[in-house]
Length: 294
Image (cartoon, rainbow, N blue to C red; front, side):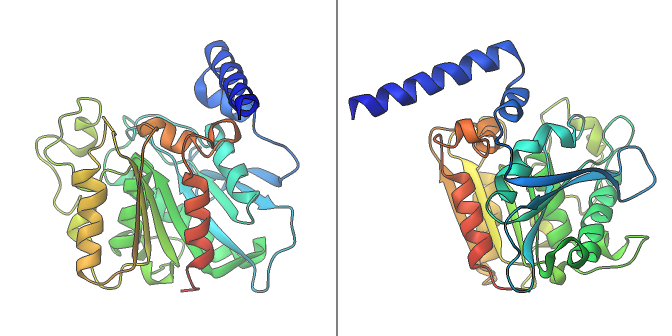
């Protein structure tokens, strides 16, 4: 037992040293294992420079019907982020047999609400349309996100306007096998964060911008995860509030709150060096594996 504690302490020291030397996300990507997936980068789902995604394919043979598919959107308050920063998420899921698409979307100040939702819908529609040709199962497509990306994912899963309005071809939220939201803001008006206020035209918020307003019995099975002590997005109001509304309509919901992680390290725990912080990856994979095709 003492030897194991020493090993974990040494590993933590090495990770901290690498984080000090570079950014935390860079450190996670540097320490991401190779050989667990194949990556196809810079795939266009639209015409704009930020309308691109990276594809992470498992190396193991696909099961009958194809791999489950996760389309992932990162956070960053709708004003920062890049898909290449989240290679550790793509690797983590692909290594567990999940075909993963990590998508960029336009950010403020280039765009405001709802243009980043239109981009996200186009990326998800691309994933639905191309799942089979990539080796995935088109009836096992999950939309997934962290923080602001979880908001995007929730809106696509709950509000049919965005997939309906995709110019490349209309889709339905009912095509999704499930929705996975990690530390997402789902009920956040009025906004107090000055960085995000302009994104939603504070104080003149557009009608229908909150995911909790679009809950219905047709919502897909849902996984909601949050850090218990999240200081940025209140898990009681957002994660548990959305879960309660879904459960009241008998939508299948799995809720997990985690000790020992923050808003940021909740998604960081997907990276190989930080998986000991919380079993977020295991819980998400278990949800995907047990959710039936839509």
